[in-house]
Image 1 (cartoon, helix red, strand yellow):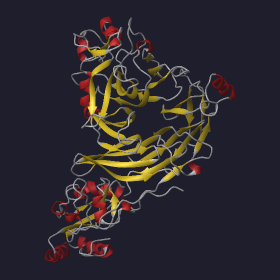
Image 2: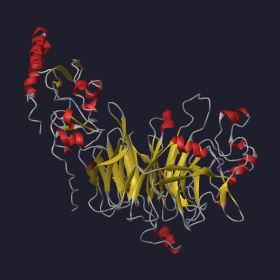
Image 3: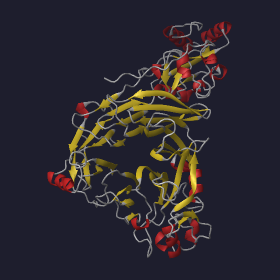
Image 4: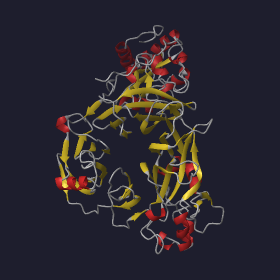
Length: 628
């Protein structure tokens, strides 16, 4: 409802006034003079709307008898969402993922012979011995690279893509050890596939490997215990060679995030720790030492703990890497979801922690740890290290020494990194968000640019199929929205964020849901809109709308100085009496009541200035809709 103290003026009558005024300069000045007598405020008159104000709707996709929607690929080239499930691959049109006539699918079943072999080796015939599609990669405009578990005989294939169909082709790539058995984490950089998985049927040989191209295939060395029963949750490709021509001449890096047994802790059995590991993209292995093995593998501990007593949330569940732009990689922030193997007060608590690139770099540039082979105890290595620095990428400093490749790295450097792969420094953080009796499973982060600053909006999935939307305001995290996603209680398994269209694609065991990043029309009054603290939403004098709508984005760009969504609620800054016109929409700024500007106040949620200095009714949280 519009505040009753505002002057209510018909938009249509104002439109007629503006049309007349715009055609007559003399009458225009008379009009301004008349309104100057009435008020000293300004308002922006939009002569017509460029698009309707209808909010985007929520859509869902499910197929009877099909489950395990575990892999999603958002392909903007053909406006398609590829969904990997158990023994079937779907291609959903992004215009409407629920539209049956727009769907394409291809069945990729496991032969009965393979299923029998899987069962004979001790796996569960009803759960393990199927083909679970886990890797979806867009190779080019015509081909999709797909990997499946294939009843614990993993295989990768090429699929030919056409506008109306797609089918299986014979793959020219190696498979077997280069695919997964159970869980798999993958990252792609310049046509190379980097993956964290296990390389044997028993699942006790974890590896991080590189394959898919004509280059050298590399992997971690199992005999050196670089990995201790890891559970991979995320990866990231960071282009640290940018900007081109920089004096360091560094290489791009691939980061992996996982939890594993913390062998450096001997005071408690089976201690789990979270890790961040990295390798260099240009790594080609060693000439004599570490042949066809990583020469740049290093790992460090990630610690998300409470500030008062240091209680650790030591098991990472998911990681989202937010990089402003490829060249601005130094401002990368790592957002992780953590749980604990111990209980404190309430079971099932979760925490969200963030880590900066500066913290990560300091850890990897710091001291190493070393293990005593006799006692198996770890301690800080305080002695000189070889040069070039072990585990570092090839830089300009190394090239000046005649080392242009890891194949040219001295044996003493490679022998050192074989045993000193664990960093001494811990990458520490305190929870941004702590929730008791909630188990977070997935996270996605979207940076929203508004008038005066940027806000990082967190979308966090739970193990009972809910989505929390949170924002950090004045160093405090606020959950501003909670959504029930699925028809039944199921864990959120994957979140895919489309930043351009403002959509989230969230999958569970048997359902896929598309939700908009904002539901601004849910806020029915100015007070509710402002108090929501939602950076996507702004009050236009009549209703609460999404600032990401096409018409709104054009409007904000035209009036960024004075409309700029009124972050601090200062009407004098919002209404400054300019007249602006573009080829699509006519915007006329005249002296009148300022009720049609786009306003919000994310930081302070101060409604007094924006909502005509009235106290809005208290806004109560509405219970989520009941599941049918």
